[in-house]
Length: 98
Image (cartoon, rainbow, N blue to C red; front, side, top):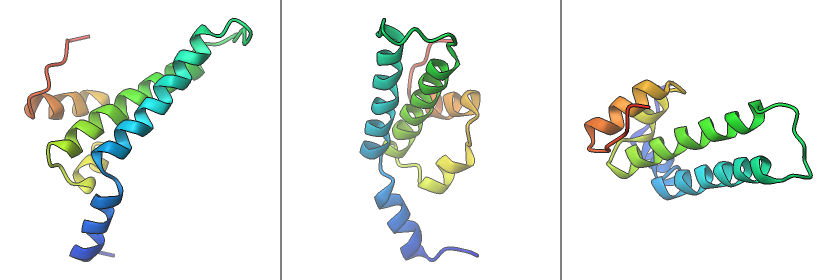
């Protein structure tokens, strides 16, 4: 079902760049805590890597929203980091190759 312009505007207002940035920050903080807490003694790094990758994704999507991309355009990028990096570079973000 196609959304009305009002519904699209509401979605864009609720999922703004500040909210995405703060959400990304929460994932990054959790990853840092897990990585530096000696009392946890994690046997695997996968949970930390997941948190870091998700934080990176949300930071990139926050940047795109700040540059004027609507929520649907950002959602279409999915979880494909190379595509997100290319899109953010097109908007002027300078990302190192790695």
